[in-house]
Length: 285
Image (cartoon, rainbow, N blue to C red; front, side, top):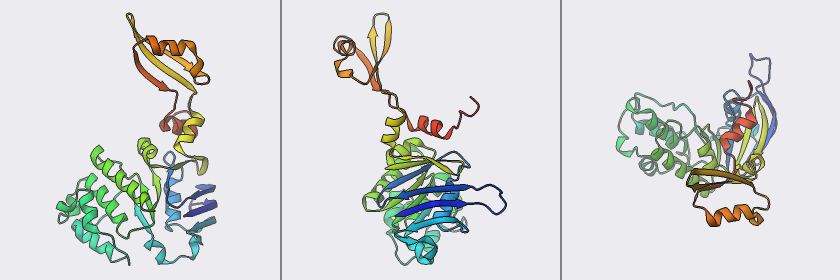
């Protein structure tokens, strides 16, 4: 869906490049996570991909065509949910929706979307009276108004309770199942792990890693198996190498003879990988 080659960008008043020659592709029908610490270049990259920033160096192809060659028709296939919801606060939710519907040739089923995110009964309320979570949900509805092929989501569940966050994640999965493609930025690693097919870690305008969450866990994880078992004196924890675990007599004996409380591999978390790859929290150590 997107092919980005040697992308570079410098803000007019800056001496240093914000984006420093990054290259990546986003496959049609995948959820692509773009992760990194604050100031790494995530939002700048998103703004470039949705044509809010120009004067770039490098090449960006969207659906087989150079992004520079697109006119306003580009936005017929693009949906965007920014991190900070922006609405007309002195208009109702439906007045907001009706305004944006007029911008597109193709319209989605608004009632269905509003009911899905729990806003249909509040459709005639002024958006200024909405809570932060309601504004975020309305933001996602607006991003889907034109039945886009490509969806950009910036921190889509930030500020939502677990129930509404799960509703939005289900909608994102369904969007993918229907052939849609998603560019996702988030600091909530559990969302990333649940949703993304591949992730890229960007640091100081450069991409340090691109792979699936599973492959990254295998790469950065520890090949071991840890178990905890009960004894009269208390709980004992033991750890064994993963290699040859099926022939490890001591490990097998513990499984057969002890009351096992926990058993898990040395798989790392995306939070740990994020810290390792980006250096966040490690720079002063």
